[in-house]
Length: 197
Image 1: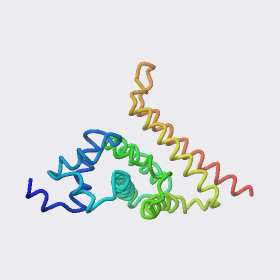
Image 2 (image 1 turned 90 degrees about the vertical axis):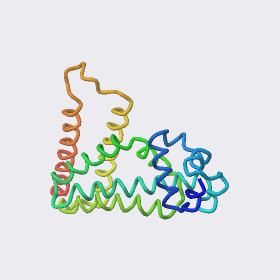
Image 3 (image 1 turned 45 degrees about the vertical axis):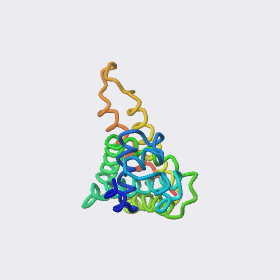
């Protein structure tokens, strides 16, 4: 235990918190279990974090950076419709593989942490760059991004709860692909709207 304590630092704390969140649940994470996993007393954690809310912010930051990297890796060398399909696939893959880290995103809207907000904007800017070839108006870009995020979040959330059984004869993979096809149709409609204007 003493060896673990001497090695205590921000990276070790975050790593242990990620492991605990993924195994026990993001909402169940607490400083007592984290301290036990690190082999220290809870007060020792306050040399590195400012309580549970700070820890959750760091987890959300980690999750955002993780997802953004996953998306960037998938869209390298791709553009337009292919890039949008890869973004959708990366989003769903992250939510399925790391469901508890995905839940960490829920704290972003109410957080005042500047670094977390900046990372969230960075992810949005990644999506905006993918849309640049379509030359949409700024407000149309925001509409489209909100549509994508709302649709993807709805699908992965319902999927995680166990919906979309195949009893109706329609596979959920086919449904997901159709949702992505709808993104493409909507994007083309925005383009037509811009041409008419």
